[in-house]
Length: 124
Image (cartoon, rainbow, N blue to C red; front, side, top):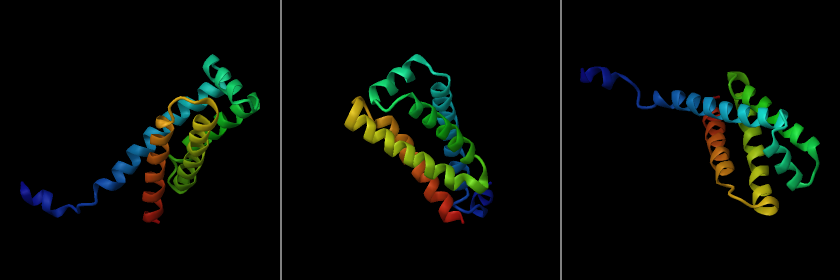
């Protein structure tokens, strides 16, 4: 029984962990993007507070859904993760500088995307 565990490389869990992170990010960003594109009341209010117009809500929602799709495709996962990192940097700055509230969720998602980005770059 112990021989089974000895034959496996200690790094076999890493690709599985990256895929789990990618799946979680895809779910989170699909949900967030859909809320923005469906013009939920909370999103319309949030982007009104930001003050750049509702067109930015549409753009952000579309970019979030695009990033969610890209992060699930092996050939484009690096691009999707990089997009999410950039989107979350913008969200952190927006929370800190404009709307207030906690930037922790954006920070956590951004760091998770950064882990995926670094992990996938190292695999190439």
